[in-house]
Image (cartoon, one colour):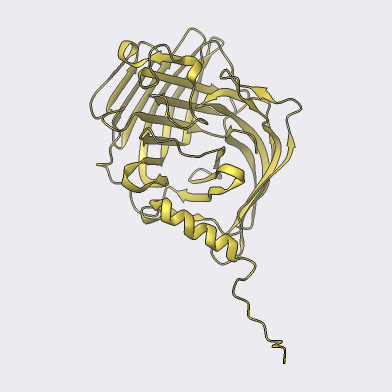
Length: 349
């Protein structure tokens, strides 16, 4: 007699759970998120097996024409193809750095390369990092200072970090670490002969990696300042054949260490730019023009959902890809939101 009974071993949502479980085996960031930042956390320049270091500062939601402001520093070229800039190498990859000052204002020299031995001075702990007379970073947690100047654009920012930290990557054996502090800034930006005062929320970020070629094929990182105290971060990283390596939304505020949400994560590109772009490394990338993303809270309720249109201000120099801004509308925890978001976009999705 035929056994008509059936057993359901896997529910429809199980593939999402299996992927999340596999990600946690590789990325141990979940052990650290939700905890206060440890002031003894290293922020050193490249040393020993750490051949690449990244310092970053990002401000979303600025008035047009700025739209956003960011600093992307990469010291030592990464082994990850998606991040590297071989066209800048004059000596060796380990002796090559690059800096981007990104905004809706474009200007000559906002992305350029440096020879580390020749152009950069830094203390062993990274408390002072100088790129000639162009850029100086100082940190004595919780206080940071950024000073940048060229003939067309200048930035002076005092940054005070909170203890609210998002850990994006914490790979085994220290292969790759990447984290982001919630901060507040005050300062100025000068362009076209005018000086403008800035204040509000920003991020300050640090990453360090060994010379291991991680299999990243697509990357996006996005930042929203929901209000004067709340910040939302979204990241999607895809590997070969679109395998999700990370799909997460981080919510934090000045008064809350926040949480990480992955349930029901969705990122959909509705329209690409009319023409693919070719990077200085001769890599073709077809960037998003219109997109939407959302995620649920742990109870399965809608946490955030938004629709976005980019502001045609992508600039090259986010490692091997692009950074820009977008105008968005949507909902966050049941309330209507609208504003200008920050987007890093590397690869073709």
